[in-house]
Amino acid sequence: MPEVKKETSPTRPEGLEPKVPSPTSGSFTLAHLSDLHLTSLNGIAIGQLLNKRMLGYLSWWRKRRRVHRLDIVEALLEDLKTTRPDHIAVTGDLTHLGLPDEFTDAGQWLARFGTPDQVTVIPGNHEAYVGQQWSTQLSAWVPYLISDDRQDSAPTGELFPSLRIRGKVALIGLCSARPSLPFLAVGSLGEKQLGILAELLQETGKAGLLRVVLIHHPPVSGTIKWRKRLVDNSAFAEVIARFGAELILHGHTHAETFSELQTPAGKVPVIGAPSASELNPHSERCAKYNLYLIKRNGDRWVLKMLVRGYSEESGKFDQEQSTDLMVPQF
Ligand SMILES: [Fe+2]
Ligand SMILES: [Fe+2]
Image (cartoon, rainbow, N blue to C red; front, side, top):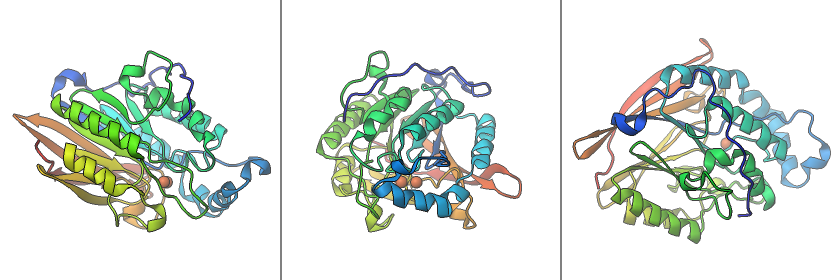
């Protein structure tokens, strides 16, 4: 991935002060949002719509511009002021066609969700719509995706996997985004990224942290259509089976999904959040986000997942479901 330029961090938005000083509290709340598709393609030049982008633009014009609604994003921001998570993870697809202006616009939206120390982002396939130059555009989001140990220096080389530690939680960000042929939206990680992932899982596991892996494409086969799959999902599953993880969060499906990956210490929950901005008559596809309440109880991790969904009737998000999660105890 080419070198990217680091930008200065925005100031903390009002009303999004952290609820607790998480490094010492012993409990932690992580919000998972995905597939916000925040940007508008109104007024873009026809010259920007060469190749696959023309198909993407037609899809946006026919459907996406109506279903991904900014009033729902505003309701989401209001709800986050009441749930006050310690950290927010955003698993990609903030744009539609990955155009430079869309990266800039989405970066401004990110600043409304929180500061870079409060929000972690990974890219989705819509950020990598065409060409190889897309990764240079990630410079607009660097403060939100760079590893902790690279925050103070100009980032060079590969940005992923990223490692951001908040309290007792290690957020490991992966990049499965890559350009693919028209009518395909596949992703892949590659050997190099999987090798570094293995090292990070070992390191953070030894440190006694709860390891949350963030990936845009669902890593369990059968979760999504073949044309949208993670190509090297078997290699990913092997790394998880060998080095473990406590939770894997993804997007891309635009629907609520739950699957698991096996390890010797038990099954790792693999949970997909729907789009957090989509108005859809089918409940499982309508805008939602998930909150994970994470606690250490003796030598065990205790996790609860709360689903907060949007209601068109109230114009607000509200709690729909609460589930105790079983996580492997390594
Ligand atoms: Fe998406
Ligand atoms: Fe996607």
